[in-house]
Structures are given as C-alpha cells and as structure tokens.
Image (cartoon, rainbow over all chains, first blue to last red; front, side, top):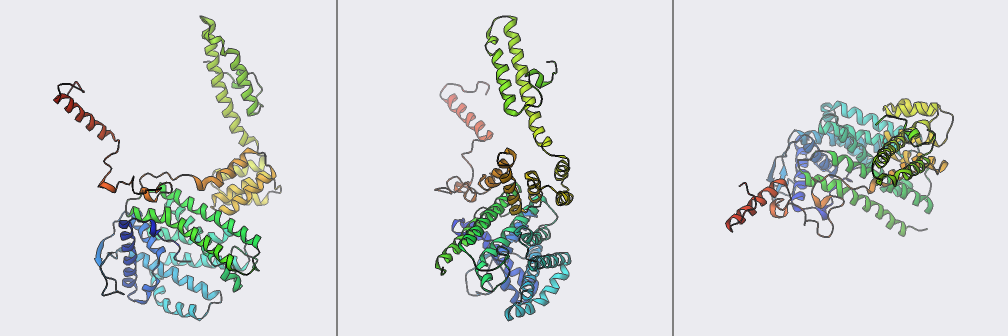
Length: 290
Length: 215
C-alpha cells in the first residue's frame, strides 16, 4: 500500500522539485540515523516524504536544508538535503511501524519466504520504534486485525474495509503533525481511503490469480466485462470523491511551509496517479484473452 | 408595519405548496402593481401593500421550506434526524437498524449517517435507493446531484501556487504566477492605487495643473 502518494513531476516547478527532493533525501538520512542501520533506508518511499512535508507545515517548522551527498552515490553531485530534525526522526519511526505491520499482514495472509525474511530483518527496529510510539503501534495493530477479521468474514462494503486503513492514517497524521485537528483528520481519512482503494484496484488481477481476498471483488471468481465495468465505475467515483474531499480540507488549511511541493502533490499528484492506475488496467484489459 | 400572518396577507391557507404560494403572491401583486403610480393617497397605499406582500411572501416561503423538511418525517424518522443533526451517529444508526420500514426516507437517513461517517460509497448507494423509490422528491434528487457534482466544484484557495490549482495551469501556467518577476507588482491593491494617484498628481503639478487639490 505504499508509494501511491507522489508528486506530479512533469508539472512541477524546479524550485518545488528541489524542495521535494530535499525532503526525500532528508527522510532517507533520518531513517538511517534513527535506525543506526543502513538496511532500513531501503524502506524510504514517497508517502512518508509527503507526510514529512505535511508535518513540517502543520507544526510551522521550516526544514533545515543543506547541501550534501547521497550516501549511496558518494562520488555524485551535491544535492540539497533536509536535516534530520525531531519531525523527521518521528516519521522514520512511523515508517518502521507501518512497514512492519504491512509485512506482518502479508505473512498472516499466507506470505511467502520473502515476507518472512523481511519481517525478521525489520523486527528489531520495529520493537524499538514501538517502544517510542506505543499508542500508534497499538492503533495500527488493532486496525489491521479489524481489517483481517472483516476480510475473513467476506465483508462487501468497501467503506467498512477502507475505514480500517483510513483510521490508521488519521492516527499517523495526529502523531506526526501533533494534536487532533478536524481538517487534518479529514485530509488523512480521505487519503487513507484513497490509498486503500487504489491499492485494491491495482492488485485486482494479482488477487484473482492467487485467489486472495480483494475488497472490490469480495466473492472472488473470474471477472466478466460487466463486473469489470462496474468495479471501474465504483473505483473511479470513490477515488475522485476522496480527492475532492482532500482538496476541500487542504484549501481550508493554513499552508506556509513548503507550499509548492505540497500543493503539487495534493492538486496534481493524486489525480495523475489515479488516472495512471485506471488507464493502466484498461490497457491490460485489452491484452487479456477473452 | 403591523405583524400579520403572512399567509393571511396573501389570502391563502397555511397548507399550500410552494408553487401555489407563488401563484397567490403573483395574483396579489398584480392587484396593486398598476395602482402604485396613481397620485395621492391611493398610490401610496398601493406601494405599502406591495411592500407588505413582498415581505409576507418571503416569510411564508421560508416557513414552507423549513416545514418541508420537518413535517415530512413521521415520528421515528424525526427522532433519527435530530440525532444526526446533533452528531449522535451511533444512536442514529441503532434507531435505523431497529426501524421496520425501509422506505425512501429510511434510505435517505441511512445515507446521511454513512456520509457523516465518511463512508461515501455506501452513502451514495442509499441515496440512489431513495431516489429510485421516490424519483419525484426534490430533496433526494438534489442531494444526489450535490453528491455527484462535488468533484467538479472549483477549489477556493487563492494562496496556493497557481500552476498546481485544478483550474490553474491552462496553456501557460506560469503566466499569472507571482514567481515571475519576483513579486505581485501589478496587483490592484489599495496601496498601489494610492501611490499611483499621488504619482499622477505630481505629474500634473509639474505641468501646471492639479489632480488632488489638497496636496
């Protein structure tokens, strides 16, 4: 469920891209610093980059951007990198928690060897992070359990299923950005819905093939063209609606820190990603034997 | 103006529909419309009556609008509606589950509960069910229309980078952005208006004239 929230790079101003990249590199550094292990740095993704920008904005804290080199490209050019402040370190922990429970969920789903290895490798860091953020760890755990129970029961309502993941994101947003805030909750909830649904739609073919549960096709079985169309319509409506709600909440928020990068993701990035995923499946549908 | 029952002023019963009320309003207005141009007391009285009719129509219309929502519910539905308005969603859901009738109003209320919970897909399904059962009820069709058009609504924040706003961009997205030229120098702010006026005054004075006489 990671990597869907991204900037719309073709339509991004260079200055905003520089800021976005600085956060991305900064997050990677913060993870390395927090975990004291280079392995965890592989878990860097664009979603937490977005979360880092959002959190800096909510706390009205400008990032400390300095030029530096990437640890993986020692001979490369220098780039602006956001320094690892408290917010970054906290988000590094959040990322560890989210990553661990995701892998844990995969394992419980009858995961393969690679999932078990990943779980083993991240467990030590997870325990440290869970000690630092016990409430969030508890919330993610219970919500994943709730989700699994609903899936097992063959829940048909995508709203109920998405609610679990959306609740996780609301809690993540509260921990990262500090304190409950109606607009932030709204934004996070709808973002959670959006991520859950787009992920479900993206995995549809894979889930059918491996006979796993998919929220869009709770009864399983092969796809008929009518079913396919109905699912596409439902998904499109719900994704667009979630984006409309995210934009509505964002419009009302006060945005002073790194506004350009944030606006690009909210106004353009989410839409671009939605269209990409929707059209990708349409293309695949043409190739599929009828 | 003496306070009278607005329905009485318009000469109708208080149980009329909105369109009937409008007809009565037009009829009453027509009676005095021409007389108001007459000279003397007769003309003045006609004007007063017209004002009264105008006010009465507005008030009566308001009453009908609010009553439409309230009187449409039978008792159990009214109770649920109140709970939703107070934000007591769980109790409202419980009442809905207990309710035996599954009419259009039930679907509508269920939809409102789901909307409050941000369960938008289910909310829309129930709203559709309500419209299907009573396709002529404006309350349901309007709500469904609002639902579907929410995505098309324009974004309202002006303080964001123009190039990224949903309506922004266009053919040359950077054109209106204040990052070109390092500031919003062409804006029509009060400060700019004043300084331009002062400037023009100086120019006039150089040429022997005067634009602002006091300085």
